[in-house]
Amino acid sequence: MGYFLYKGLNKPLIFFGLKGSYIYYAGGIIIGGFILIAIFSSIIGFLGILIGTAIIGGGLWMVFYIQDTRGLYKKTRNNNEIHIFPKRFKNRVILQNENKK
Image 1 (cartoon, helix red, strand yellow):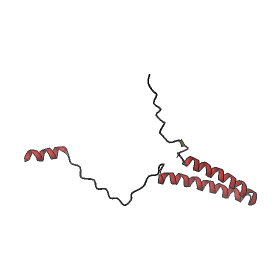
Image 2 (cartoon, rainbow, N blue to C red):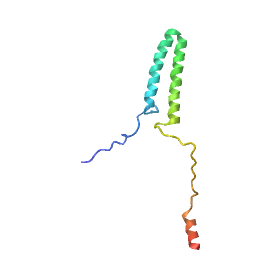
Image 3 (tube, one colour):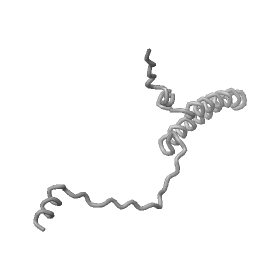
Image 4 (cartoon, one colour):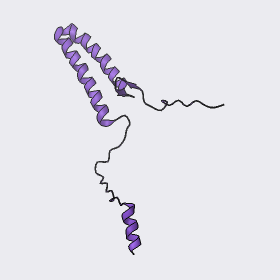
């Protein structure tokens, strides 16, 4: 008896391009924005609706921007490190030099 392998088990949840915890951030911004639209529309009127939708749009843009810049996982960036890669040698050149000796 074999076991089934679920291929998508360790992959993050993706919804409209948002991954992992950013889905919850976007949902919170949308729900909070609708509450602000209800409050602003009762106080200011149509201008309040426009302000609320601008807040929702800006918040969603910010979530997508943060997801693209920071990434899905908490990784530290080492910007002050210098990486030096050695020059690649071709095997033929090394073998020819060894045969001449």
